[in-house]
Image 1 (cartoon, one colour):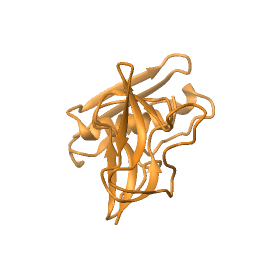
Image 2: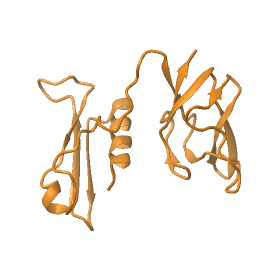
Image 3: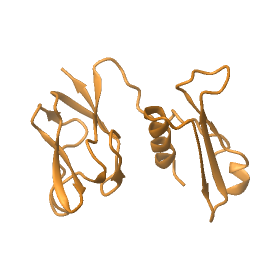
Image 4: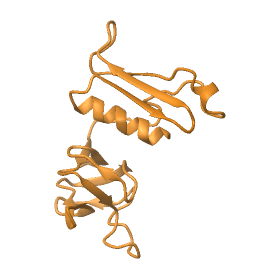
Length: 155
């Protein structure tokens, strides 16, 4: 189980109605329990508990900060989110260059990725002008409706 998976689970919890989630990785014995809305904490802040993570998975960190790998969202940084469930692709074909990379300048109509849904390739547009500051999904990963894909510093 990697930190990207945990980060994506936290994002799903922040956006949705899920208050508690537990995921187990049987081969390594790692168990992640995410819970939000506990007493004394902000109801929108997920809390992560990793019992015996270091003992269960050799070399695993003793504690994981769920926000350590999450980009800070400063003023003027907006998300491009997935308009559908499907598979995320950064380029039109495996041999082609990515539509955009970190540091690329995009406009409202710039194609930033493709999401394949039911064998149909759907071009996703930035719908804003600015500079790509982070790509939040790996090529070929499944994405959910509303999942953040890119962070763009708007002009």
